Length: 232
Image (cartoon, rainbow, N blue to C red):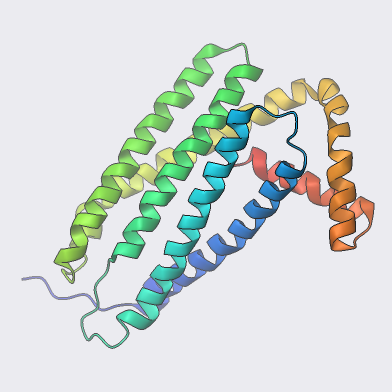
């Protein structure tokens, strides 16, 4: 029988807490994006408003299970001599992340299809996204199945390390593909986008009044939000 691994706080607990805090902070950013969107979505298609609402609800669920996973790691199992390496909250984080990532990437790949005349680029993006989603679902399923067997010397992480690593690499590849394609085509359409920027004047004034900051600062904030959105 292999030796039981210890719960390495600097590597495991520290990484979990840092990731959780960053995730919760980003949820606040996404919430602000959603608020600004719904202040200016009168002319948007209904399906898009429902889609944004679905993403926000999924992000809320992801934030809740993220906070629960920190509680589990720091409170629930704190007095255990042999600590498990996996829990239901952690597995739920993986599942939420898989679903959210799939929806968002599929949306932006569809945007690339609309902006670009190169259909092969969208097809490639969809294929990679579906493979990435399938990989993430397998990892999520195995994570849930592993919880009743804990503690088991981190056998889940050891057995499925190759699939987890492959999924992360594939997800990063799709992110780079989407970001590069979106930036390229938006730069090609920049003269037309100048006219669309007038729609953000109301958003700029709203943020300026709500946060009591200069209009220029509010415009810079919106620009940052747009850049973050393109990079999702």
